[in-house]
Amino acid sequence: MAKKINVGTLISGGGTNLQAIIDACLTDSIDADIVFTGSDTPGVKGLQRAQKANISTFVVDYAEIIRSCKKGINDKDLPLDFDLEKIVSKQQLVETSALNEQMIFFLKTRAIAERKLLDIMLAYDMDLLVLAGFMRVLTPYFIDRINTEPGSYKIMNIHPALLPSFPGTDGYGDTFRYGCKIGGCTVHYIDYGEDTGPIIGQKAFEIEDNDTLDDIKKKGLIKEWELYPQCIQKFADSLNR
Image 1 (cartoon, rainbow, N blue to C red):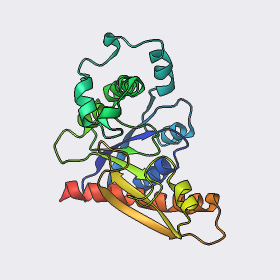
Image 2 (image 1 turned 45 degrees about the vertical axis):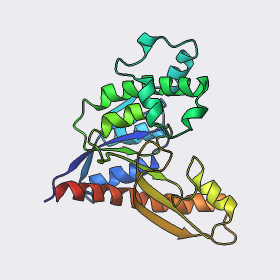
Image 3 (image 1 turned 60 degrees about the horizontal axis):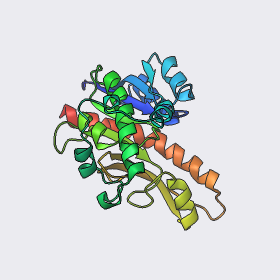
Image 4 (image 1 turned 30 degrees about the vertical axis):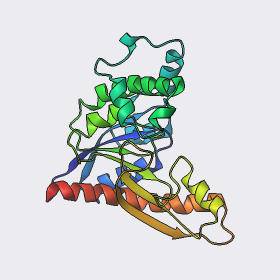
């Protein structure tokens, strides 16, 4: 019997992808156990799903952290190992020449929140971090503390489009508005860019002429629930070779 991997999960909302992964774990469909579920938003349904499955949960309230930071950020508020110059040189969200005070504020507030996440997460024995509908961009500060070996990826994300087409926050909407006849979803590893990491797996579906955006989202979610556990199993297989 293959050794099970320990999976950490982060969510922001209802957690339907989380539920698909929970179900796959509980039925031994994949060689994995979820060791925690964290959220950037208090009170979301995904936390209830995790608690029902006896999974440890926690919240790092990003909105509250951002509100607090708007009153001013002191050096003592930042993580001791925070290096703005190094993070700026690695991030690929904007051109370095386009950095302004707003972007620097973003990187600092993210690092404050990400350090709180890390302080909780790193207490767990975790092989893989799965973003199951986590709607916050991760910065190099966080990524480098999970992906500790060069060329080895340990953060997995699902995107509602067939990457590299339609990166960003509204993949199904962009697919619909472009008039595509094929839609789909992608599971990929996280790197420093936006939806640019190595692709692990994809599933596609046909878009009919009379399909609405809601129809596309429903078709996409069904594919997501199939794909995510399969990609986690692919990661588990790679460790068990």
